[in-house]
Image (cartoon, rainbow, N blue to C red):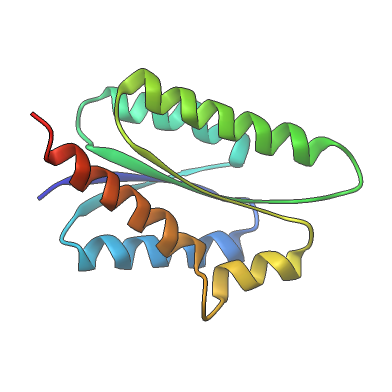
Length: 140
């Protein structure tokens, strides 16, 4: 079995808990093992996921979190830094990392993407990782 790391932000725990459950169920159904690594917020995801993948114990990772627009530019700084950092971690380690960080203008918008009938961010991100792992497994 292939081991995957799930690194999840504890900020907006009602939303991230559902995303985590979706990611876990998706991995179980696809016959992957996983370990969950909780972090405080989205900003902390890149450094932690990079270090986890550098251990050589995981084939890839899913990063989960929620950032909701506020009245200050903090939203832009956090979401941009997370996206850039997670991309850099993937390129540095050479391993796939699914970007399951949900950005929304309102809490209600985030709820639709987490709990929705048509779109569930935790499932989407995890399926993206599985597809990447399948492609990489075909390479020499």
